[in-house]
Image (cartoon, rainbow, N blue to C red; front, side):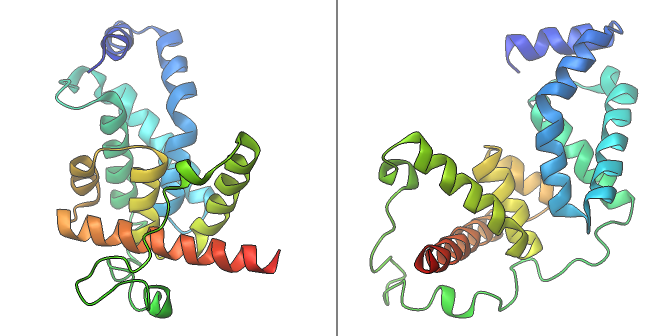
Amino acid sequence: MSDGDAGLVAALRAGDEEAFATLVTRYHPRLLRFAESLVPNRAVAEEVVQDTWLGVIRGIDRFEGRSSVKTWLFRILVNRARSAGAREHRSDPLGGDVLGDVLDGRFGATGAWIDPPLPWVDAVEDRIVADSIAQRIKGCLGQLPEGQRQVFTLRDIDGIDPAEVCDLLDVSAGNQRVLLHRARAHIRSLISAEMGRD
């Protein structure tokens, strides 16, 4: 846990309302974005996030600091979403057959890329283009199967460590890698198709 997080946790334990407000300002948008990938609509996501903040208030004295504050918050959120029954409609964790032709022709017989994609950061020439691509990616998230959307959101948008993602979503390391790979390939395909229409 970083020094800033340690100070924030200590202040929260002492009942400092400003520390709580800082925590909410820092993490609420991320929690809401991830909650939307767990539940069927924004209203339910907002309820889950509200319940998460209540869980933080009630559980701050039990936080032991073995994980980061961010991971602790995401773990509370996942537990709240599950206990609310929001994930009863859970689909195939690997995303089913939705990708079909997305992966066709992209990999050789050895499983390696035929034409490896360029890292998006390296391909972006300026900030305007980067912002445009980020908006397109966000627009594509709703088209991903649930498991792919959750892993992509945690790994590529929120920067959560792969092992922590496995723990949060209760998936194996192999499944987490497959979900992330498929999500990236799916988004790349959707953006390519969209750019072809521009």
